[in-house]
Length: 638
Image (cartoon, rainbow, N blue to C red; front, side, top):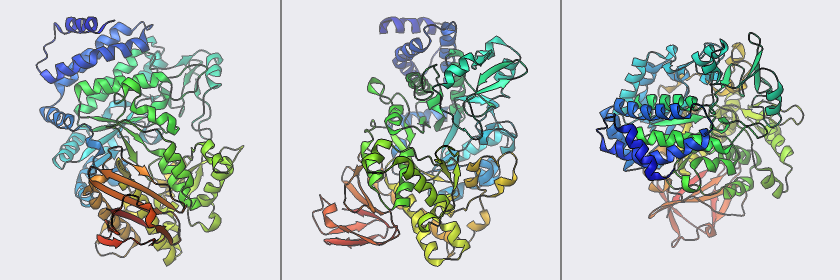
């Protein structure tokens, strides 16, 4: 259908609709042809296509009408600064509401804490209504439009948002797209045999089609939830459940599901969400005979979410939570003509895993090689840079790059796991394996920042040397994510070096999931006397606060697609250059517990023998050979 014909169709639809806002009308008209094309590509053979598309248009108009004047004003401000989330002034923290400070009201009380540290973007882990026991840490949603009552009421949430906005704090929400809880009303109706809602999921009368799907499907939790389908004895049927048996995969081949989820996303946009973390997006479309991740239809779905969001709430940004290979993750920013029409941010999971690999090996070769292999992302998109998060660490390196370095990929992974879990080669780390592959011994890794850095064990043994080194290692990780460009995300508790949480082993609902090892309850008692305390947690907090303050004053640390990794023969070192207009900063990181040297030849464009060290706020002479101490990080401005 030609563009003029499509716009004519839109005008007919709008004849009975009064749209007073000129900007909304322009955005709707500009995006309508693309949305129409995408819908046609996905649903040309669907019986629900026409009905669903009309419902989608009604949803856009309805939700814009409900959007507050304050939100619309924020939208226009951000439209004039489209990559606001890439600024050097943005610093994030992710947290569980209940583990951080009980509930929404408790979170509101801690706004001064965020501001003191320098945090202005807060990612709340799932806070929607979920079943009490089996809920995958909040990722099995029972009601997409109700908050979890243990966190408070919707009024409490709205009051929190209001206080956040008064204090210029951005809010990130987990939006669980791939699945819902088996107690969601859609699933309840589907269990009863309601054909409308059965088509919201993947139902099968026997194992014939599930077996065909399984041939190319990977298992996500082979230890705790093997297989990708769950048997329902009451109806003698099977339902698709990629994650856990109580999380039913939504069927996006039904356009009514897409419309429901877009309408829900816009509902939360109007509640004041600034950034959506789109959870498990890689799995949203399934086909027999194909791998169950990264199918082309996934990208069409995400473009529809983004374009509809831009029409109603153009100031909102979107994160792709797709922990996939580097050559795949880059596609979630949008490719070709769709560049910028998909997600604005994505997790830099590969760098996170590689930084822990480099610390285990004291060698940055694989890190540098892997980063140089990543394709350049589109402008106005950025990475979420992080050292730890709520999830495990998966060492999903490119086997080809590992082999090119003369290493055996399996043995290399097993060495890293021994380092972090078994104290191998003198390591003080206290990590644990997660989801062990029984035929190979390969696994993912769990543990808090303090535990993996060796600080937890060093404090228990009162080993002064190891305590100092571990504090430096934590500072190193934070200094990297703050200087790479993009949105740095601190994992709550890491700013005060919280140890592992072993209490989860006493909780029946959690003891089988070792990821709870690094999901600790915040210890607010340790926050007192932070300014003068010599304690390790206070040292970590004060240093992080300094680094955040420096970052916000350094334009080079914004993301303008200007990150340059510099090749250097000293394999203990990672060296990169960040620049923005006339501001140029060299970052030099020592990934070993030994002091080492770097040479002046690193600075190819340095015209004098002096630089300014941003961290120490002092001038530094550059000689032919220069000293850098164990686990140190230098931020050097020309």
